[in-house]
Length: 112
Length: 112
Image 1 (cartoon, rainbow over the protein chains, first blue to last red):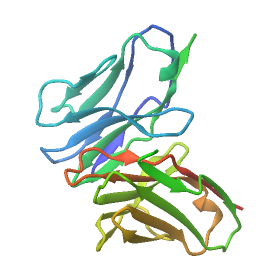
Image 2 (image 1 turned 90 degrees about the vertical axis):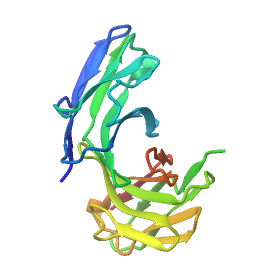
Image 3 (image 1 turned 90 degrees about the horizontal axis):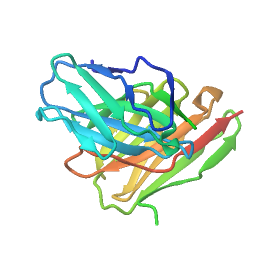
């Protein structure tokens, strides 16, 4: 069975700093997708970034980037120049066969 | 207008009552999903549908049923609500490629 583990339940960083959220997953599959979703206090689920497992290049979206280590089954999210609006729950997720499995989330606080 | 809408946004009901949560989408997607979010547990898949005639159980389908009335509509029912079904419920859609899901705003359900 696939599982997704986020080992940091909660984190706090100062505005403008860089923060890295950890995620590991377990699968025997070779082709799959990985995601980071953001859930701000509005509770809307927002896709932050997506990584295809067959791509070696790490995905980047503006201030958000990932460190994808396929052999280690690790998929961390780096937020650069953090902003107050980045305060949210962040969920790592794994998709295979059109179904997504979510981690339990990391609550991130950006401090002014 | 939002692409994925959910009604109601908030609902309080009593134990034993039947309740229906509705989801509509204007994205033209074939695939629709219902998730449940509990604090500290992330999102878990309840049911999913890849087209009008295709309904599948997810990880936690017990106590729930669904109806796919049309491509654009997917309803979740609790036949006899119980307090541990108190949660935030999300509907999501994806196209035939399935590698990105679009979430509705969520329905907060409280069963007293």
